[in-house]
Amino acid sequence: VTASEFVGVWALFQRFGNIRGWLLHEVAVLYGLLAVGFGVAEAFGRGFEHFSRYVRLGELDRLLLRPRTLFVQVSGQSFPFNRFGRALQGAIILGWGLVSASLQWTPAKGALLASALLGAIVLFFGVFLLTGTITFWTVEQLEMMSIVTNGAEAAGQYPLSIYRDFFRSFLLFVIPVGAVTYPPVVALLGCWGIRAASVRYSVRWSV
Image (cartoon, rainbow, N blue to C red; front, side, top):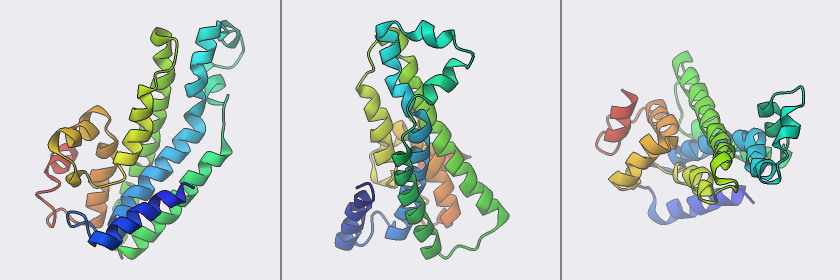
């Protein structure tokens, strides 16, 4: 089911050929990077989405009395192995995109890709953690946080250059999903000069 999302991306490129100069395999690198980061973070951090139940029912004290830390107990409360399916299909698409790009690999590029993957995982895990934290004030989990998690993940799968300035700034500075993926991918694919105008915000942020 999650793999069918990329079919929509493929159909878009079959119709238009490119998006603001971006080819299918280049967008596949962005898509795969976000899918892997979100899938791994979702598998380990989905338990925080159920944290509101402990606050609402007054069961938080029971967790605090246990010998393990609250962080470990809540994160391990819900560990959906099926979420790794999203990460797996993302890794396959990411691999195809990188192979199609015919990159000349260097240790620096390998480190850049690894840091981008780690950054995506940490970012989304932090958002899940924030989702649980706000229930101390709201009691119930806010559905608005789904916009931050799933919405940001969906928007970050496309080049930031296709969005308007205000939304591009939102993805770079407010929910910085674009900051941890877009500049590294642009640098990895070696398209700084080719798309200098369309990535001006990303260049400024990375510098």
